[in-house]
Image (cartoon, rainbow, N blue to C red; front, side, top):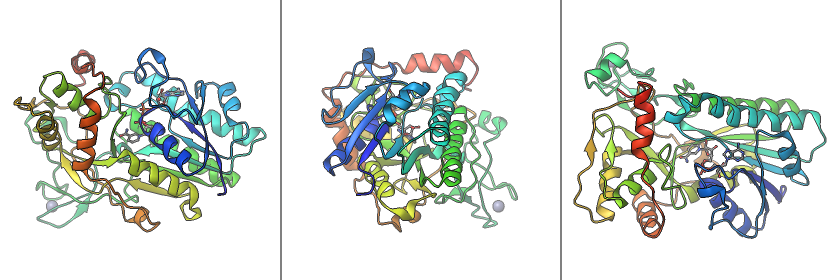
Length: 374
Ligand SMILES: NC(=O)c1ccc[n+]([C@@H]2O[C@H](COP(=O)([O-])OP(=O)(O)OC[C@H]3O[C@@H](n4cnc5c(N)ncnc54)[C@H](O)[C@@H]3O)[C@@H](O)[C@H]2O)c1
Ligand SMILES: [Zn+2]
């Protein structure tokens, strides 16, 4: 094992805690730097699932001294701490840029200017950085990545992106890593910046760096009381509270759900495998799931007779479809092992005994107040 002492920033969160368990199981020593942000952690208390074998430093990635403390005797960093949420990022612009961009910059600045023992570093980027994924035109066969959809089309319920040449409705195809990042939201712009900063400083100082573009993570421990991210957790929280899942547009937009333990394995593989150095990888299931299907699965699991509510509303910065081409990471020996159905059954069992405060109306009001939802 080349890098045995790992710092996971955001290690108390959803993905970080699963990664912590997985790395500890594999014999690594794990330290966590996490500020226990109250949007994720009730009363800013350490979560009960936190592995006692990990060392927790409560601190903030926007403070240089917290990074310095956390980096002592560490030889690899997995940087997951971030403000996470597409809609919220459109009005908490300062917080998103500070936590995600400044947080990353401070770490890299330490590498460039101070003594350190870091031999590898990995950052979680996001599929949201692509904007729309790749599509093909069924008529003129042209492959293309459409820009963000025209608001005038959305107002007329024209939800599918149109071919830029012949205006036919496009069909989504797998999105490879070579697709341009057109990042339509503040969150996705910060993720693009984090990714590029890691790769640029890594290359300049020859510290192997990797960026993983995570698709929609799902699994246990995703906060059921955070209405700003994690559509599977948001829907389960609604259903548990006897409320219908609210579907924007017509509900037929798709997302690629990848299980959190599959993500933990992908991160570990890229940490251990030198062929991953200075590369970017998609981490997804490669399977598009319509959002209405996710809602139906949540309702069926809870044996509910409620119907999903199709609102016809839209957010101009949302994308219609993007699912991963995962062939690049497959070539390193990874593939998803947990299916959507298996994963959903598992979250359902877990959610039964979890506190789920439904704050969806509050989150929607915040968007409505700013005319961010049509
Ligand atoms: N969940 C997804 O579907 C998804 C998809 C793509 C990318 N990602 C990325 O993966 C990473 C982890 O996401 P997650 O879903 O586990 O989120 P999460 O919110 O569950 O975890 C993030 C953790 O970071 C901590 N944190 C937030 N701001 C911090 C700060 N300034 N200093 C220190 N700690 C801070 C929080 O307390 C939390 O424990 C993020 O970088 C996110 O952008 C997640
Ligand atoms: Zn066409």
